[in-house]
Length: 336
Image 1 (cartoon, rainbow, N blue to C red):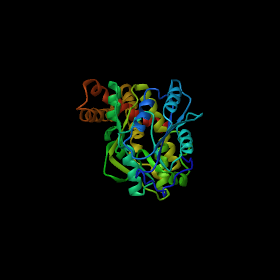
Image 2 (spheres, rainbow, N blue to C red; image 1 turned 60 degrees about the horizontal axis):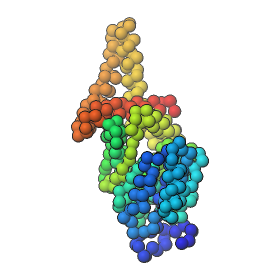
Image 3 (cartoon, rainbow, N blue to C red; image 1 turned 90 degrees about the vertical axis):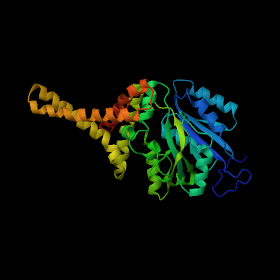
Image 4 (cartoon, one colour; image 1 turned 135 degrees about the horizontal axis):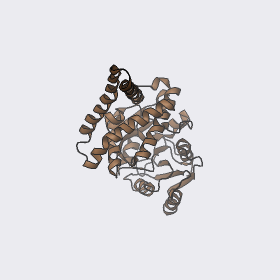
């Protein structure tokens, strides 16, 4: 088959669906990479599927597993991502991809069987530049299950549709996404300055260019979240920091959702300091304790409601996961 890109206008009459390139960048994804790729290749999709994996320097067997997959499946291609950074790897994978319908995957995300059919079909039906669905977090440890619930809770992560659901149609962003190559080329692909938050920033530029981002709420991709407190806190700290960089470059994207965590950190911190000072000096300053107490009370109430169907071990850890998300994200935003 020719390696020249297939344009949106080319007919694909044999199957009725165009060939698609699924692209991803991975680093330290030994646990999930093989299952991720095999699920992609097993898609219920009536068209050719190519998988391009950009591999960064890893501390586990990620590269070995990627090479084994490429040896076992002719439709899998492995490319290098020497920087190990996400936007660089995504751009490298896109450059190596052969087709003009491009679907982003993640090494720790698992597609449902009809995912490609749904998102590529919607690209063709709507004319959108990017189509995607919801992130469906699934933890395996007690803390991981608490993190998963936090990442799908309006109180935990906010009201973004790709986290909490909504109506089908135009949205600011979606999880992962399926793209038209022409739209990505129009805006220059992923901005390699943004080590994190590159998805949101790309979708912002697509919308500024007059393109549409289309959300499918009933299409859910399983996501394996961080399973330990340290890795989750580190992830959220870095994400908060990069969100501030996005706002610095695109000031019009600031919103209550992104400003709430740093505001909670500042208010709770000032209240705690004021209350502690009051213990040693002026009694009326003890009123400062009301701010952190009010926040923690809100977390406790939200956790009791959001975690009512969780197992006991995860339910106990849910308030910790919520405070960790808000606190680490907020601190990252403030000190980026």
